[in-house]
Length: 336
Length: 255
Image 1 (tube, chains in turn blue, cyan):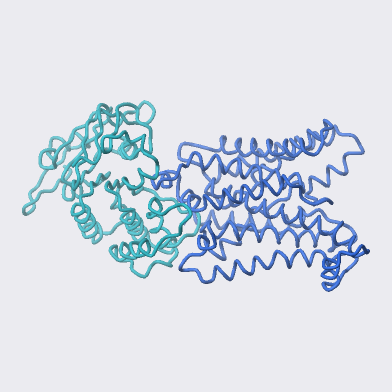
Image 2: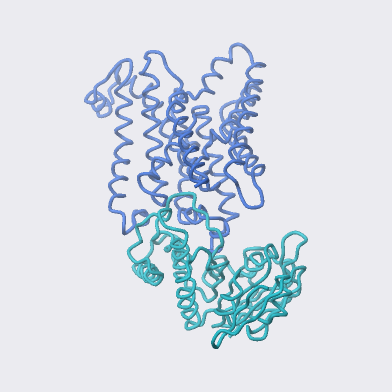
């Protein structure tokens, strides 16, 4: 499979992937060691090696590591979802948060929570909400010639604010005891407890599909007719992307609430480094997205420690300026 | 040898018909031009013939089999398309773009072979862009991009080549030289070419058959010598055209 990923003309790509692959364990170790009670790397290694019950062991394996693992899965899912949505919509500004996909997942999840349902049903509801919301935006912003940037973003923003209003409504009718948890969840909070089997299964299934379709994705961004004329079943591919991106968003939302802009920032960064070939972008975005969120989660609990910030706040601090910059650069290209 | 046969087909958008009951045989080694006024449905007809838009009536056959029974991959190995307005949203290189033409020939889990790379290099050289492989597509001029697309189309190595306004953005030099070389190569390899043209004189000069779309589904077709008359073309553009001799050939000039 590695042969598939590396092209003749890209000696630099191998190095980039190696660096990214190293970044994942490094970010996990860093996250395990840094915090309100610092544990140096040696002690972290020692704990992992011996596995003896100790204070360090409890902090690393019961508090920090599950959160980091969640952050890893959430970051990877969001980055891949963003990449897939950008290919689907042929627009580098698409992102689960900006287009309201996360909002749709959150509304469906919160509703089931309020109705008193448990974990699995909440996740399933989030998945339904995400896919429905994305389908709605695509359906509404489509015109004869495909999707125009402006119309897509406007529709996405309006749908997102619609979900926002529904969320406020749900919060205002909920019980006092539930509100704080729900609010934190919404702001993007990687909670305690690691990712479940289903979350990982979804991530790996969509990853396998994306790698399998990576050359088709390269053609899809060059235009639907163009891809079709080169033998791509575009209808099936686009439908699969819709479901895949929706499911990934649901994974991220059920694990950590609505965290914005990871799906925007990571693919953009990776494109700058290695171009637009999805065979390279998919593994790169996965690793970068994962380790980026692990580090962000670590920052969220240390910057103003022991006070914990919601992770979504930090990603927004980075994401908003970048989004505005991209929007401005994009509009300049259109006018020239 | 007939590569494609359209059997009483109807194509169009909404209620507007580009052609009705069109009977057309695309023979190996021939070059066709589709002519007609703006918005008459030239592109729609081209995309329909290529199997990318649904037929409104009739049937299209390749080797005695219906076009819609062919798998997408098999179709992409037979029919190649050059689009009028290519979209570039994400940065891509010249080499990657030309290599996309090899897509129907590369197995899903395989990478491009050395032979694919050789074809890409040859085609780039043929359009005068050798050594441009690693250049970003957005750094090229409109005409250079058009040549990259032509190279990608040639790299697809299909028996039928459909082009929507191939001379768009090309300067005079490439309009004549490239089209001449490209079409001569197609003829020599027994490929059939179907192109939508805006310039009557280029169409008359480079193709051997014409298909005129008059609107409302009405069409006429045949060898250039028979079809390219003052009467037909004046009716086609709803404007008087005069035919002037130029050496052994002739050209049309609007009154």
